[in-house]
Length: 310
Image 1 (cartoon, rainbow, N blue to C red):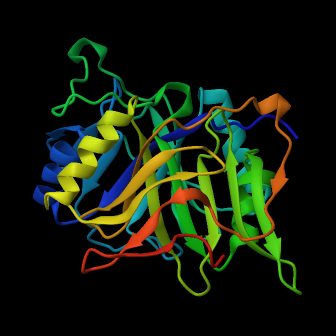
Image 2 (cartoon, rainbow, N blue to C red):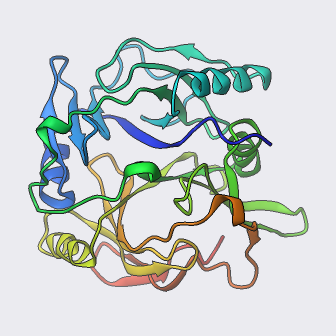
C-alpha cells in the first residue's frame, strides 16, 4: 500500500447559528483566538494557520444528500500531486468528488462523503499568517504541526466500511481495532496517516450517525486543569471527567460544544513511528481508558467510564 496522500487533520467546519456562543466557548474555555471574515464565518485559530475551526451559517440549500452531520472534516494533503492522487483513488473506488469554491483557508479543495455520512474536504496549501503570530487569550499552546489539528471520533453503524474507506482508499494506517461477537463485527477502529496515535476513530454506535468528539491537545497539563476549572465554574458543561486513554496515553477531559458534540481537551498524547507500528486488536473489557473518563451526569455526579460497552 502506498503512503497516504493525506498528511493530517487540517480543519473542521461547523454549521451553526450560535456564533456568539462558539466565540465565547472557544476563546474563554479552549483558548483559541477568533476573528470573523467578510462572509460572517467565525474563524478560530490555534496556530499559524488562519483557521482550524470555521463556524459557518447552515447552508441555505441544506447539506449534501449523503452527508449526515452539520460538520465538515478537512483533511490536508502535502501538495497538489498528493491531492490529485487522493482524488484519483476516491474516483477509482466509486466515491464521488466535487470541486469546492475558493476559500481563504486553503489553496484548492474538493469534497466527498465517507461511509459514515461525514462530509470530508481534501485540500492542499493551508493558508498561514505567521506575521500575526497566534496568541492564545488564555495563554495555552496547542500541539499541531505535522500531527495536525487533533483527531475526530465518528459514531456510525458502518464501522468496518468507514475504516476501510480511510485505510484502503486513503492509506491511513490502522492502529487498533476491536472486532467481536459471533458475527465478528467491527466495534471500533483507530487510524492515522501520521505520528499522532490516531487522527480518526470510527465507533459502532448502532443506528446513531454523528460526530462524537474532536480532540485538541495542549502542551502542558496545567492548561488542561485550568480549562477544567472553567467548566466546573459553569463556563461550559463538562461531559466526561478527567482520565487517561490507554492507546494514545492522553490525559484529558471532555466538554460539550454549543453544537452538541464534545471537545476532548488533553495533554501528553504519544507519537508513534509509522514504519515500526504493529496493528493491535483489543480484547477483554473493551474499556478505552486506564482510569477516569467517567460520564458526568446532569446533576454533576459521575457515571460509568466511557467505552466499556463497545
